[in-house]
Amino acid sequence: MEKPKTLVLTGASRGIGHATVKRFSAEGWRVLTCSRQPFDPRCPWPGGEENHIQIDLADPNKTIAAIETIREKVDGRLDALVNNAGISPKGESGKRLSTLETDLRTWGHVFHVNFFASVILARGLQEELVAAKGSIVNVTSIAGVRVHPFAGAAYATSKAALAALTREMAHDFGPSGVRVNAIAPGEVETAILSPGTDKIVASLPLRRLGQPSEVADAIWFLCSPQASYISGTEIEVNGAQHV
Image (cartoon, rainbow, N blue to C red; front, side, top):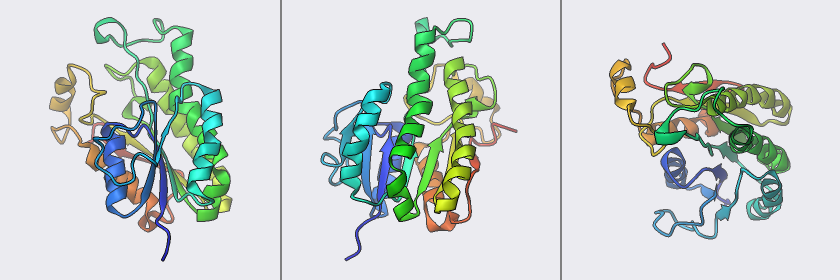
């Protein structure tokens, strides 16, 4: 009997990550989830607890150390790596943190989680991805290409850097048969949304928030055989917010 395909997913505990676990599990994949939180027994997928790795992506040393644990669990082959973890710190009362107000420690914290962790994991799991001719999907953001009323400067620039990294990784991993793409969500109904999002939604051509499952479907597509000649691209999932 053929072994199920395997996904390693960061930021799995809520929102887009949660929806992505459900989407891939429904297709029969084994999903290794990585998040700061311990496994939550309320998560409705099989084998969740033994396939969970508690990891603080804000700490490069802990991220590097977790690579060996992940490698042992994937056992030589990794069909997909989805770098979904992201943090977006706010100021007092949820205020947007601009370039003038974000302290250096916060910049570093955001970049470790949103950017450097993706580099560390992709490099650390290179052999397993190559063995499976696998796929990497980086979750970026509409904030990576335009100033956003709520997403702060550190978040936005980390996502822009992740989009550029996607291009570089597609170039570097391509000769080994590994595809690398990005998904850039707009306003999606998750816990990261800020008060006042309804004003943005009123101006969107589709006039509604996106659902986490709609982003998960796009991630699934990029990891599936249907996307076998798509690499180095960023798909915008934002209800035409970018136009």
